Length: 210
Image 1: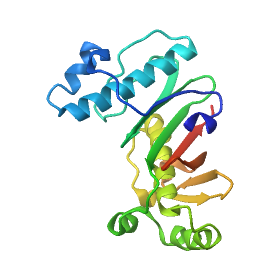
Image 2 (image 1 turned 90 degrees about the horizontal axis):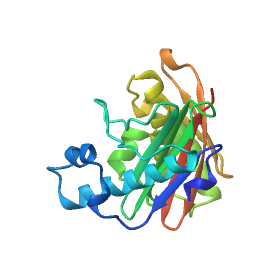
Image 3 (image 1 turned 90 degrees about the vertical axis):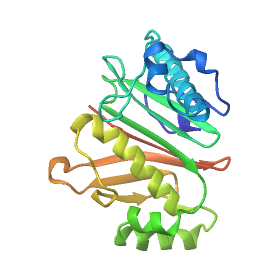
Image 4 (image 1 turned 180 degrees about the vertical axis):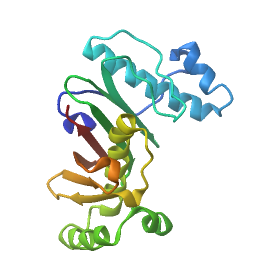
């Protein structure tokens, strides 16, 4: 699914979990006290990450989170991991091709009302109402949420400053593209990406070029 969205990147995805034994010891230690479902989810996401590294010509290495919980990729690589119910994926690119990369996947369902109030800006709600009239089969609030998550994952490793949902104003194209305008002084820029709704999921990918 996500491989159709990304320029110059490797992508791997799984619909079923792999055994925990695929984890490196350093990775297994991270989730040693987690419930079994979380350990399998973590293992499968790392399994996907290593598939992307091999596609780029890099060896298998542990992918452990840093102090900010962002995955640490080998030097020369940028990447991102996502997981939701029944789906795990990773994407990676050489840092010469992309300086930032973020992916997200979500169930294709309407956002809970309380989440919608936290995620969407007033102008976004107005734009989404127009999109919903044109295509009511798409849960546009979920697409916007997914896009913001992907934007954050692409932006944060470059800046190491948190973003609130209100700090990103998204503009969604029904054709599958989106733009995110970052409304913070330290990041006066736009981040572009693409989205897709398929097989009960919404996926989004955002990237920053060097």
